[in-house]
Length: 221
Image 1: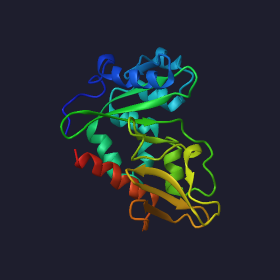
Image 2: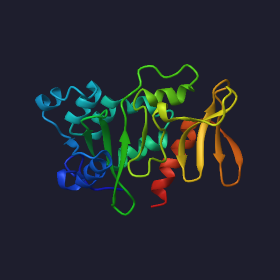
Image 3: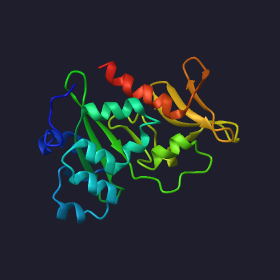
Image 4: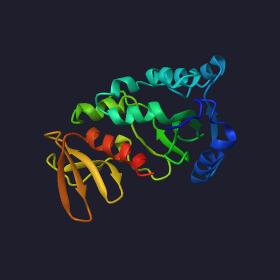
């Protein structure tokens, strides 16, 4: 468990590698702001949703988590929420010029290395065919996953991959290695597809699978 203090454990020198990575991807320098922000500074960041600006002002994770809406996800992602409570040491927002902003969650791993998850803008109108548990996640972040790999968490809805053309085919929402998890539109039933073995495994829900994947990835550190 981390002994680093939220949110002052993270400064620009620590976060620089994430900024450089995104700047290289986009081909121009990306701005970054880190919590805690002065209220006037936060108010001026109009590209950010109000809940992000509020969260970035907070000096404790529980306050930031509440502002972002994570309390509403505890029934769907209990292990992830516990993980965040224990390991989040900072928050920051990436501010690209030509792309929507994203929110970075800085966490410590088992060996005290820094891990970042990236959250995209919340969805105001999840699709009616989306299972309620996944729609609840979208209202906090429509896309939330490990920064470098793009794995473990749900992709933005526009990047979901239909594995077929019919309503009874699976829509892949997230990946972990050779596995993907998704749901069938007309039944909202959730499944994991193991591409290496060409097997399909039913699961309780998309968020139940993601909760296990994300929490287990920290246990494996």
